[in-house]
Length: 348
Image 1 (cartoon, one colour):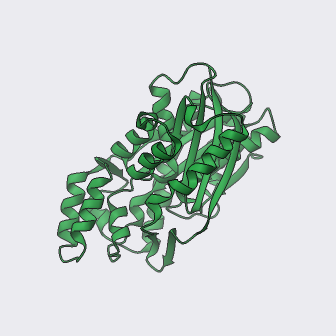
Image 2: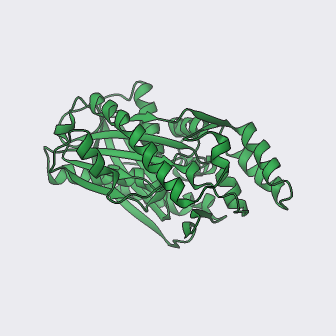
């Protein structure tokens, strides 16, 4: 059975605090008619600090999409390999043992994917499969786990490597004055994560079932407008309420497996914002403490998009994991509105 091992996570060295974010919003958007609302929304995120790939002075400048994408490529190549090395070491495998690389990112573009560069530079086999996923946004972390599970189910002795590289700060658009965009400027952070899913052996979550669910007619609630200046994040005001229609999907996948979604031992959930976790606690009927790992990621790193679920899982490992055969759920949410969900048991 496929087991997702301890993820490795890295965040850039440049830090911006909540206080700095609020001060910058007051300075840059002093005349904005809804500035007070935007400031309250940013404060309510609970994000104490975020890590960004460039100093804030460079982040606030917009040198053009071409230059920003070049930064994305250069920084990905500079930072991703070390995270992969740590993930492989935690899984007690070598690059040559990996059969598929699933690379997820929504904050830059490369073709061929970074997977081709990694295969050439890091001694992966030339027959390693490549699955780049670029358009599932924050849900891609959960989708990567599910695709790795599917692959290892089809090829029981195979091993999959998941890599998430998100430099959300490179999508900052100083000319966008919508409240949703101003909120995103205080919510999203940068981060890289990698994890191995072993077809056999390993310590972590042994995956048993996965599923996807799309909330009908919500494809424009979270989206990018692609313009000459790059990716412009669009966030509908209805997004914070999406747990009400998504919670039944989480209950259904658990029910199909003979489990009660309210009675699991652990939850690794994408933390898009504090209300997501608060509402999920309400609609699933579980204690807020159940989402402590996800909330810690949000507080210390912000929303690091597809890397959130891997960082929350890393925190669970660091906390000692769970008891043998403990039952749990992992879920990522993102554009669509899409949920990517999986169930598994802790295995030592």
